[in-house]
Amino acid sequence: MELQPNEEITKTAASHSGRIETDAVIVGAGPVGLFQVFELGLLEIKAHIIDSLAAPGGQCVELYPDKPIYDIPAVPVCTGQELTDNLLKQIEPFGATFHLGQEVTVLQRQADGRFLIETSKGTTFLTKTVFIAGGVGSFQPRTLKVDGLEKHEDTQVFYRVKSPARFAGKNLVIVGGGDSALDWTLAFAQDGPHRAESVILVHRRDSFRAAPASVARMKELCEAYEMQLIIGEITGIEQRDQRLTAVKVTGSDGVTRVVPLDILLVFFGLSPKLGPIAEWGLNLERKQLVVDTEKFETSTPGIFAVGDINSYPGKKKLILSGFHEAALAAFAAASHVFPDKRIHLQYTTTSPKLHKVLGVETPVFD
Image 1 (cartoon, rainbow, N blue to C red):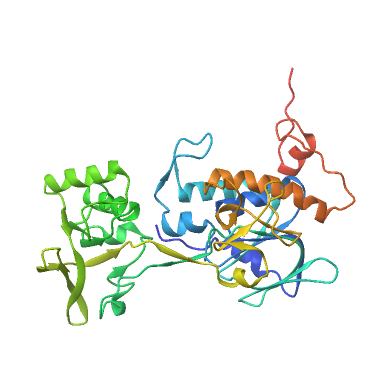
Image 2 (cartoon, rainbow, N blue to C red):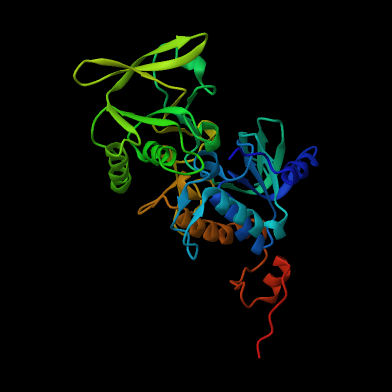
């Protein structure tokens, strides 16, 4: 699906002018960043969220909005878009302000202990705490290096699928051997709303990095003549009237075959780039922020890192792990926001105070 910025969110952000003073700024509006809003909200900590993308959801929505997720507790299956929509609904009571389509360019500690933040659009903040929830940084797709191909990007050559309907009924060549390549191959080769006219998968070897079940299903479709697999590498292209008409695939036998197409989809993986985060003076380990497992605080007190951006012994890059990290980071941040206030653990099931914060009625039990 084609994602559009939430109008209500962008209007809220546009209403601010001048320097914004707040309790917390969250960098990253992916699932973990959104849940961080919830955990902070329960502690009455107000937050602003900054993200370089035009809509909330992070990698889940930008790269795989329709891909199913199976490991969210109590949710047997949901898509990345559904997870994002539910998280946005969950944080509605807390009135967080989103600043989308911009990235943090400056992060500086001030004399009073707060942090000055500036974004690429000139928005400035003075905040008591910072939460970095930017995944593993901004992603750039690894591109196919073939002369003349670049000029066809975003018209006939794509490195990600945002709107599957755009490719329905087309003659597709898909390149790659990982999960993304196989997932989209199956989506376009099988019966369904996005079925293509034809699908040819090109991979440089006959072994794959994708889930075995996906590989087996792909081979079944090949045997049923529903699609085709070519082992080889794309070494050239053919064009006519400024349009890409075919790719040249050279096999291990040295023979080059011309493969006609309408659309070329390339899935070589994504290269993470930390960007300005690398210049903020925080301790890094293999391009990830080092944190403790009590507070999920970085080497700078008051700056926390949650989700795939952080590193600690036993780290697992799972959304549910990020949710746990967000909860502990929120409690740790409360001592910075409310230094003279004792924070007690309360339960959303029984706490009248939390019910008031959430805008729900306290249940009466007989």
